[in-house]
Length: 473
Image: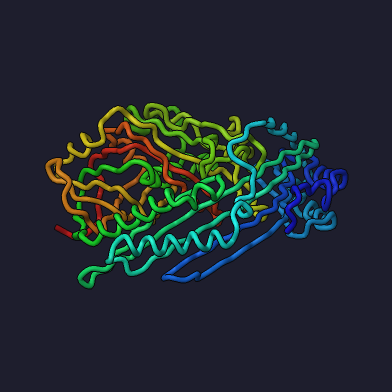
């Protein structure tokens, strides 16, 4: 793949010809565009003392979309040619039929720069990357004699996009992404436990391969693993729960965030459908989706329709005030798009998706919130979970949690799951810490078969009466 700037409408898809095909596909439509993309990615995995995998992928292609009412015609191709574009235009045109729509205005361009456009893969040599992973492995093993296995990974990618609108508007964006992850397994007395830490963002690799950065991740992974060595079976029942700051915001993202995406609400399949302007959370709860935070994993200068990203308030002081919208859902719901139209790649049509979704902090001391718990748990880390968008019901597993009795933090617990529904959980929040934090940059979000990078965040949150699944007491 060439390192020259990605300019498809000057080379493989000449602008005049591409615009002719797009206009023929969208004549009488409400919206549409050509989304062209070039992407490359590299991933290295050092596992159990050796380089286990090293991969490099490169791809490019386009997708052509024509939108008419609630119907979307979409066709894509990895062949960047006018002939492929003609076939795509004919296919997408089928959704428009006899037309009658009024083409929406193009998004307003932005000169904002939220992150570097430098290629993070080329920023460091291959040998440097391998040696960094080797050093991580050796460092983790030297930290504690109980470490029996180490996995360290490094990933970098660069996505370049260009969007062409039927009126001739062109919008460009370059998106870097990097991440370093460290996992360790420790063994003591025949018992093995694991811990992991990692993160990154839309930044170069320089900071991530700095020993000061990855050593912090290594120590955190080891700390979690050692905590789990001492963990006892989790209690089960309805009890008060304190959620830690930062990454535990994944529960907010899954249990509440998806329910605030425009398409689910337009179709009436969200637990929040029809509740605009109503009290849906405890007073003091404010939830935002913000794609404008510099260098963050979930940030985007423009979305995949060309709309500039925004700092969108979803819940304000407990009142539902907004949904995340792409252009189609915004038009059908009579509101403005919010910069949340995202897609995994050129092979997919955009849909409303989260960027960085977080809850604002309060004024309570986090220690005081934990001290209010009479009998419950303090959940600091989360793993996987499942959510039903229609009713907001969720099940999340804890990777680090502690038993709390009479305000005192006790032994770590293993196997704890949090069970509930997002709408009810929002009303049971009785305390917010002054320690709001974003996650370290490791989130991916799945929806309808598409994956996009996201960010989450929250302060320490104290909740009443959440169901905890574990071992019966």
